Length: 340
Image 1 (cartoon, rainbow, N blue to C red):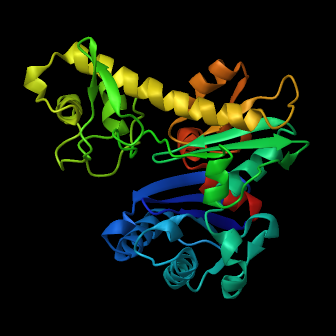
Image 2: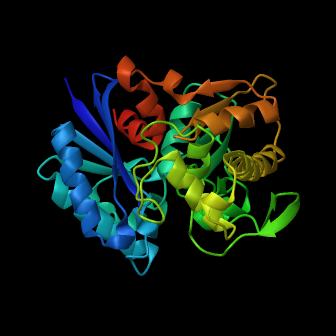
């Protein structure tokens, strides 16, 4: 029985999924903040290997090459690949290169441009095996991918991050790490529009924690102020974003403010989806396939777009207790299954 581990190597998290006999049997997600140094990736690999054990084959995709620890994306691809090879030897390792499929580590330089940030392509390719026409969306801690699939093929107009952002296929909206001051300049509070402080005082994890919507285990990063992850602490961070202490506000006021931030983020994602959908006709019953830790937001997106919703977990075979985690970490699962 062949075992495969799929790796999604990001600049904030390392995600990995173990597949045995075509079934996902374990999934892990480990904080790996590369802006603090590339040694964070070594630490994350060590923890993941402890939890998952070795495998006959490892298949990896990455977005970590964008981390500012590297001077360029090509340098990042080469360095991340080098670390992965060193961490996983002597096990066999291949890298996902989008339309070129799996490539060996020694071919990384030749395929650098399509190995870079290709995790969305792996997940959407797996979705296309199940639905000839659909809109695939993966909303994670930092970004949201919105990929059209028509006739069983990916119909994305962009491939690299710059192109994908221009086409609405990559929206910088996530349910954990997104900075509150990044998308809005004014917010409603006490009957007037008030400006936001242009400081990282709070993020979207605080918003969804206050609203009671943040999935368990979604936020494994440190908070903006290094304090705890209680609702009260999140309220304090949110209040500071508009220049107040929590004691100067009422909980209902902060909950209402949090709802505005959540609505604004949903509008951003909805705008991206409308742009994508405007570029070609879909089958009348084409669903939205939702993946990522932000699936609770994507369900609302499907309602706004009047599309049926299908969860990514319904596309894969997984042991029952980790089905939700498999959907949270869709690219890691997809790259493992595509390597079968």
